[in-house]
Amino acid sequence: MSKYTSNRLYDVSYHLGQVAMGKQPADLVITNGTLVNVYTGELIENTDVAIAHGRIAYVGHARHIIGANTQVIDATGRFISPGLLDGHMHVESTMLSVTEFAKAALAKGTTAIFMDPHEIANVFGTEGVRLMHEEGRSLPLKVYTTFPSCVPSTTDLEDSGAELHVADIAEGMTWDGVAGLGEVMNFPGVVHGEPKMTGEIKATLQAGKAVTGHYPSEDEQQLQAYIAAGVNSCHETVTREQGLSKLRLGMHLMIREGSAWHDVKEVIKVVTEDRVQTGNIMLVTDDVYPETLVEKGHLNHVIRRAIEEGVDPVTAIQMGTINTAKYFKLDGDIGGIAPGKCADILLLDDLRQMEPSTVIANGHLVYDEGKLSVDFPSYVYPEHIRQSVHLARPLTTHDFLLQSQSKGTSARVNLIRVIENSARTEKGTATLPVSDDVIRPDLEQDIVQLACIERHHGTGQISLAFAQGFQLKRGAVASTVAHDSHNLLVMGTNAEDMAFAANELAKLGGGMIAVQDGQILASVPMVIAGLMSDQPLATVFQEVKQLVAAWRQLGCPLNAPFMTFSLIALPVIPDIRISNRGLVDVEQFKLVPVEIIEE
Image (cartoon, rainbow, N blue to C red; front, side, top):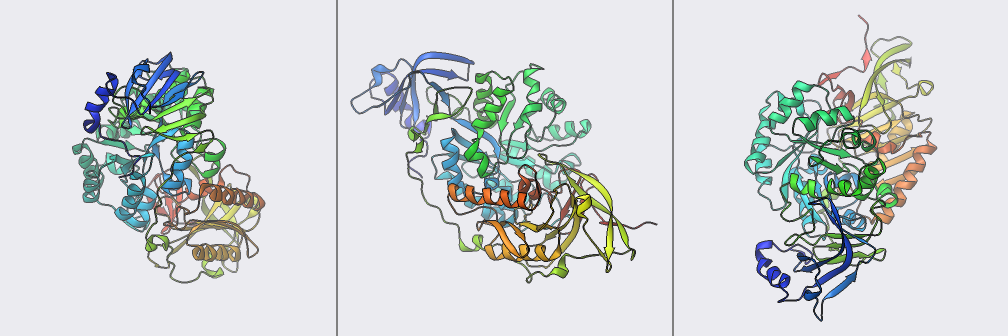
């Protein structure tokens, strides 16, 4: 156990009582601050908070608890807020290890996360989940896990590196620090009573833990069936109307603001215009990448965005603290500042800016005066986790040529049309030129070649398709971050650069790469399962900045293009995707041909 890990309340309750009575001194006392009371919604001036054994012993006027060795922090002119809780996120999306992410998150005021490590689960199954879970348990950041539910995200449409079964979920619910079931993306499986999904939900409910959801559909009947089956939250809400519908049915609404998905502006209207009760609303990040962490922040950025849209600051903080703690049934420990609670506390100069000047986690000063003030333990992943890209052979130009079945000079195709800043896609069709019996991309129509290559078992399986909307003019890009099965995804304007990008990325051990004319423009090596870097945040931040610049050099003007690209292989979000098995119509949940053959 880390020295920064919180003491159990039952182990220190007697001592906390003694401190509160002034019979023992506090370890740390914060004085003269304005308390953000998330229980009552009040701002209470001239408040002290006394801390002992990693927990809060007293809130009020605590001068009687200050001893000769008590550390005192004067919070005059500052607000005393609970540490922020991110109720749904994927650490893998930050491109950082859990440890490196924790450093960035704590500096921005996040003191607890509820991570869903279903990215690494799709590569290494329960072993991968346990490794990330164990890494998180040793950190000053509280890392709770929601055990991945959909690995792979669908059956019969893709091939991942591993598969989780009901028995794995039931066993995972016994781990200390597992707070619930990860987002249940296979909502059709839930509403139609698929045994795997119903079994996973049953195991979670029997353990008394939360079943977190993922429901992007507009079907009201299926929504009610989904909720009735036991799924009681959703972060895939993108409209005010969807939010109202879910709240009225008792669902907990997670409003998301990540690097690519900006849902606060629209969905927060349920608060600012509809004036609903906010107890069942949480603010979450879902997916953020290094540039966002460095330049905007973590959950503090999401809370700031809610405030900018007109939410009262205290209400916004409630949606990022106590509401989340209550949802996961952990409000006895975290989420607020009160006697007995874990001492996870922020000092803020300005509630509207949400930039902490001081962060206390588990009673320890972890961030102050612009820098981290504690050491973090090192964590090294096993070598086989760092060698996860297994191709049958080096790829060639021929692998990226899609043969036409019609034998004409043109071919009608189904394609994937991407939408900027959205996880969704649109199904499109187009007529493309054919030469030498090969269907060619057409840059005049903004249509480029796509490929998805199985990379876990070295089967050599490759599927080809087309994408529209990235505005690539030259070169190619590749990624082993390809939600959720994380096969090797390649996109480009020509087969030569696509083969080069795929082979070079495999040599790096996975990650992301951009190339042009047989030259690497930028790369972000991610040797941990092909999903996370083993480098510090500052290094990854610079690599990602170079990658963004390289995408722009190739012609793509989109915000967070590699995030949009990485989701083009996720066959559980409408309308259409690519997997290693082929083109997937998500509305019909079946594979469809790329070339449309006229009868």
